[in-house]
Each structure stands twice: as structure tokens, then as C-alpha cells.
Amino acid sequence: MPVVVNGAICQCSFGMTPCPLVVLPKIPVLICGMPVATIMDFVPMLNIASFGMCSTLSNPTVAAATAAALGVLTPMPCVPAVAAPWISSNPNMISTVGPCLRDTDTCMCMWGGRIGIVSPGQFVVL
Image 1 (tube, rainbow, N blue to C red):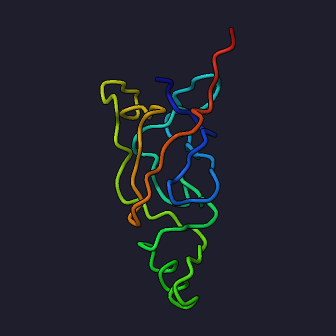
Image 2 (image 1 turned 180 degrees about the vertical axis):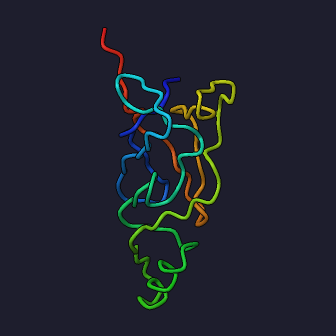
């Protein structure tokens, strides 16, 4: 289970495109020269950017656009609505800034999307 670093790729189950995770170098703990992410790196539009278009009817803008289109699902621009930290699969992996984010960790959007890590952002070269 690799540790996630700045530039890791995230994907939402209701989003159309992946987005990079932005890790601010608060107290930089580095792996491969990149700041390590923690479970507290979940702030919408700061750490987690837009996933392009959102396709869940739980999202009020998608529901309104779909109703206006007489029931035809109409995706709308994604604005992540994450209100809680990442759910850690290994809370024992702790850095100086808190529990490290692993590539198996997830977080939830208020509209029902499950956000996961597609690529941890760091690779081991053999």
C-alpha cells in the first residue's frame, strides 16, 4: 500500500474525469521529493479539484438540469462537496503532520460519490 504524495490522481464514482490531489507543504515530509498527503488533505477545490461533470441525481444541480430536460440525465459541472477527512485503511502509518494517506483510502462526497486514489503519485523504480 503506497503512501500518497502531491500529484496523486483521484477519481469520483460519479465524476467524468480524474483530478490531481494537491498536497500543501505544511511541514514537508517528502517521499521521492514530493510532499506526503495526510487524511486531512480533503478540502474541496484546494486539495480535491473538480472531476469534470457530475452525474448523480443526489447533486441538486444535476437533479434540476435533469428535471428541466424532462427526465433525461443531464450531468452538470462537478464541485466536490467533501466535508470529512479521508477514511484511512491504515491509521497506524503516521507522519509528523498526521496519519498518512494510502492508495486504498477513500472519502465521500455529500452527493454520494466515493472518491478514491487511482495513482499514488510516486513510483518505485527497480
